[in-house]
Image (cartoon, rainbow, N blue to C red; front, top):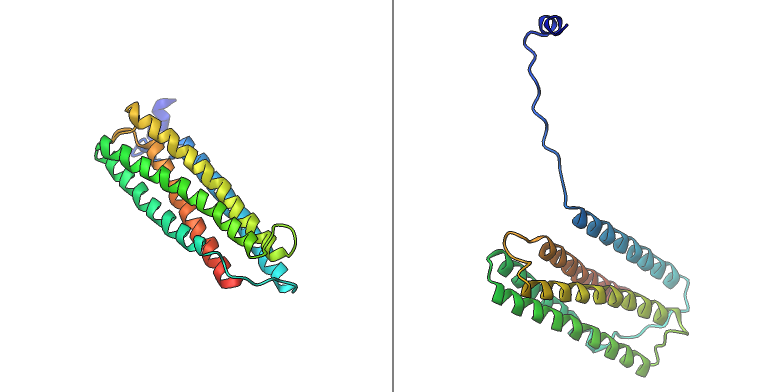
Length: 199
C-alpha cells in the first residue's frame, strides 16, 4: 500500500511544520487583564460624556497636585525603563536602585492623589452631589486602585532581584511588570487629558 501511495505522489515530500506564534501564558493573561481595564475606562469615559451632555454639570479646575502627579508618574516610567534596560544588561545593582525608585515614585503618586482629593473637598467638590465630582472621584479612584496593584507588582520584582531571579536570561517577570507599569502611566495621561478637555 505504501508503494501505491509513492506511485500516486512520487514527488511528494513531507512538509516542514509551520512556526506557530506563541506567548508566555502569564503574558497572555496580563494582556487580557489590560484589555479588560481599557474596556472599563472606555465605558466610564463614554458615560461621563453622555451624562455631561444632559446638563446640571459643575465646572471646576483640577487640583494643581494632579499636574505634579502627572510629572511624577512620567518620571516613574523613565525609572522603570532604566530598570528594564539594567536587567537586560545584568546590571543587578542598578536594577535594584531603579526598581526601588519606581516603587517610591508610584507610592508618591498615590499619596499625591489623596492630597488632590483633599484639595477637591476644600474646593467644594464632593463624591456625593454633582455628577461631575462623582465621576472624577470614580475615574481617579479606579486608576489609583490599579496603580496599587502595580506597586505590589514592583515589590514582587524588587524581592526577586535580591534572590537573583531576574537577569538577562530570565526576563519574563520584568517584562510583564514594565508593560503593566507603562500601561498604567499611559492610562493616567489619557484620563488627565480627558478630564482637562471635557471639564
